[in-house]
Length: 284
Image 1: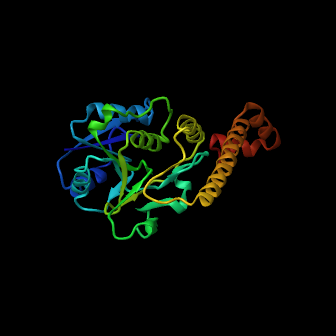
Image 2: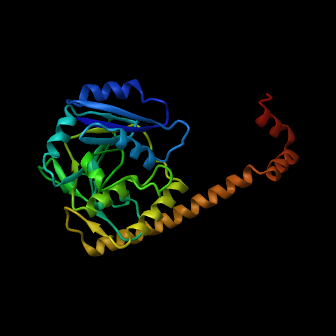
Image 3: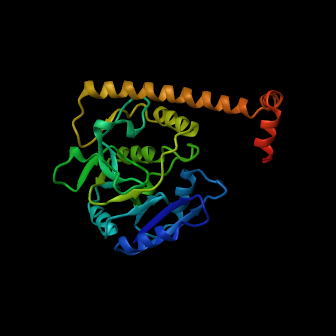
C-alpha cells in the first residue's frame, strides 16, 4: 500500500486533488494530511509525523498544489521499488549538486524531468539528457513529489534542525545517497504544478545550513558525466546569484521595516495627511 503524506496549509486538501488521486493512482492507498493551518510545524516535523502515522510500505510525499496527468502512477512507483537498490523516485531533479551554495534548480545543464505549469500548455521540460528510458539516475529530486520505501526510515529521517518549509528534498536525497541507495526520476509520471516557488530568508538560511552540513560530501554527481569546467562555472554563477539574492532579501526586509515604522508613517501623514487618511482608514 502507498501512504500519501501531505503537509497542508489548511485543515484538509482540496476535493479536486482527492478526486484526482483516486482516479489516477491505480493501487491501494491511504491519505495522511498533516494539518498545518496554524503553522505549528516545519515541513520536516510534519513529514516525520506522517512517517510515524503511515501504514503503507511506500511513502509518497507531495505538495497540495499538484495534479496527476498519468494513470496508474502508483503502480509505476510500486514496480520501480521492486528493485531494492532504489531509495527515492521523483519526477524532476538534477544529476549534479555543486560544492558551493546553490539550489538544485540552478543546475540547468544537469536537470532532467518534465513538469506542467499552471497553464497546461506551459511545460518545463528538461528531458534532453535521456533517450528511450523511462527513468534517470540523479543526485537529487524536487520536493513537489517523491516516494521512499518506509523501511528506509529506520536509517534516515527529515532533519528537524532545519526550520520552515525549504530544502527538505535536497537533505533527504543526500541521506539516501549516503546509504548507497539510488535516486530516480520517473519520466512516465506526469504532474502539473499549480503553485509558484517562494524564495525567502528562510529558504536562503536553510540552503546555507544544508551546504554547511554536507560540505564534505559535495560535489555529487549521479547518472551523468559532469564536465568539470562547466560545473565550476555553473557553481560560481549560482554562488553569485544567491549572494545577490540574499542581499536583496535583507535589503527588502529592511525597507519593509522602515516603511512600517511609526516615524515613516508620521512622515507620510505630515507630507500628505489627506491622502494618508484615505489610504489607511478607507475614507473615499
